[in-house]
Image 1: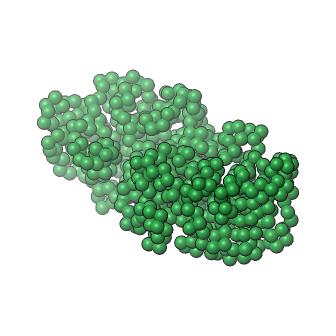
Image 2: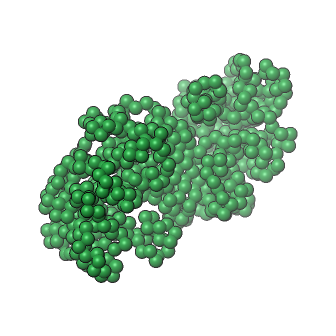
Image 3: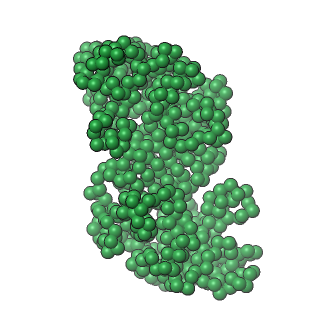
Length: 317
Length: 317
């Protein structure tokens, strides 16, 4: 099968990788579409030391499974693959089981390939109303929704989202659907154009006042973004961190202590509400797509995705 | 008067600094004893860019005040000096009012001097049962108690305190008074000797397992301590940050996001319960005192306080 792989920390297109072999309660899924996310770009830079097939955002159809009811179903998949009878699962749940693998990130080949094997328990059926180009956003949309699973975001809360990128724009949309007054903060006017089109408030991050925001979401993926987030937050404020970094950023953390901030790390979220919002058409994801490449041109697609200002680049199979 | 000052970012002993001039609702306090804290050592390295008399931990007696009831009273003082009729006070309270000054740290001369001026509203009378050498610990003991004001620490909670230093040992003591199973983590056997004497569990931090602690307090003041704290904490755990740093530490913050940690910045705490614990003799502070120097030898005292393994060094006046 065709696949985009990291081998020896080099990104490659492989035209003839062997198909995965599902076992027991695993399904074999044929992939239609996969998305490139910031985590993929960090993995290419060496984050997690991952080797294998990349890709954890995808849409596909079940080709083979022990339970015939699954065959032919259009699916997405949650990405933390854990054994429910293991001890780590009982203590931490699926998302934080220390023994888990993570699709295309840690110990399990991902979905930028013709086929991917996945435990049935991780699959979610896609409602008919959701086209493939929307369903491929289920995983990042769930990650955006995770914030409201962790902290109360009240309709009257002003929220600043630093980083109007592929994930930040989903965060801005979902928080504003709950009623919150969202301001998107970006490095350039061009980066804020879509936020304006969506009716979200926006501002150049350099022009945002010090100590001016009670609730800040950091979704830039770079140290400069984190520095701005810590600069603009008010004393006793809450900072939600959504970015992972390949390198340790040198950031002055004094404000966390002196301002007695609460910092919340936030990662994977719930798929069911993400699929509900997509089925109802309440989230604009189409505007986030910059390009779609056939998998053979995957390396070009990664270069495209890494350019400043680019949001979602898809791979079709 | 005699004073220990930072001028032109150099630490000096000044034998003839003019007395402060209290105005309105301020008192003039004669100082008996002052403590050197890690924040003072960071100020000397350039933290906050402070210039003036150092010192925010002290015991003294009111010499002059508009209200004669105050004169002759033995007092300590909270360190955030704010105007209760200002707008920042209404929004953030005394501790985080952006317009506040901070005793010996920001815009207000401190207490390593024969006399210090302080707003009456910040003074707290010291119960008779508390000797000077205990009362001088009121401020750091309050800072230790702040943790339980911010997050629930249940009697059945295991807690790891990284850094068995001057503040860490007060944190370990206060949390264990509440019933929690405290483990002190230090760099050397010598650093853990007092913890053992107090009946607290202890362990070399290098030997503490990855992902093993649900609740971690970081009180080392250095990047290595923060790295250990982020290493030993379990997924979904809570990290309380008590240290301020003169320099931005380069620390891999990925675990905050991937482990979905909650990070709580924690600074100044409540004086009343600190004085209650000291009056009842429930906290051993005497064992934390390594040396007492007359203020004329203040520079020597600062050198002593900066040595590894040294806890509290006092200045007498």
